[in-house]
Length: 373
Image 1 (cartoon, helix red, strand yellow):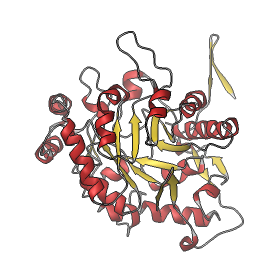
Image 2: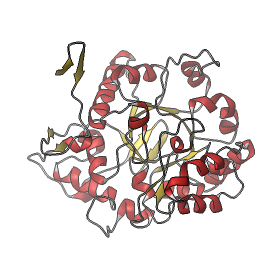
Image 3: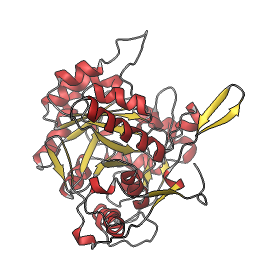
Image 4: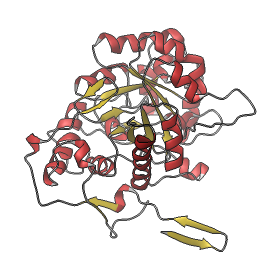
């Protein structure tokens, strides 16, 4: 239903995860009988969790840890780990910066050049641990570095920006031809963000294996304040899931995975993202709260140190527990920031669903008493 904002503009009502809730059905199950497994292309995972490519969340070590715990760690190949031989002192420095100087100092640190040999070495380190290897580049850097990434033996390639379109127009440089790039690349590609049915459908038609949903909704993002862009995630995920359904028919059976990326900060958000049609979630702040996360209780994304127009900030998120306990418990708190997978299992069991694909059919209601974002 559209709402009239004024004589010349109408708008559609959109919903955030805080606006909705899942509803139990007539059947319940034991949490032990629920499967949280997920697979994309030839790769299978025990949990539907990707670690966001942010320096406060994923290092080679934490990407390995997440892989060993059943998820997929995605390394930011434009982060400190590919600019410096030893970024640990710099990560500690960022965590210790005063709030009023953090942005400028991060801009300085991230102005160092990316070293292709470090891209190779970091991915090789993850590969040597025997887990699935995934790395992320922005569309602007993909042409420059993808050959290095593929030669290093990446299993899944992620192209991630604030928003990525299949039809980028530029008068300054040659834009990335996404369809040709994916066709020529012998590696599954996950691409995003997208927040509308049409944008997602176009990305699916490029041959992407997965589409990231969301922009401007993360805990460390100020995209809404700086650019006026925001996508209430419940509606965005449902719209992109609709594009997946229609593309499945259009393509004669090709299934493209929908991955919620942004605004997924608690176990309740994970539950709601999957209920709205996501196949998996990409977690930033939820994993940045781990005591072994590289951010040391702080969280920031690549937008926070943009050279000309920062669209994010470094935020203090605190430390809840180890990465293993953040995912599997036992939870030392009752606010949805720990034992994320245990909570997901409990919700699926309470609503009577045995696997993630079935859970996408769960009944959802709008909760009018919740505040909108």
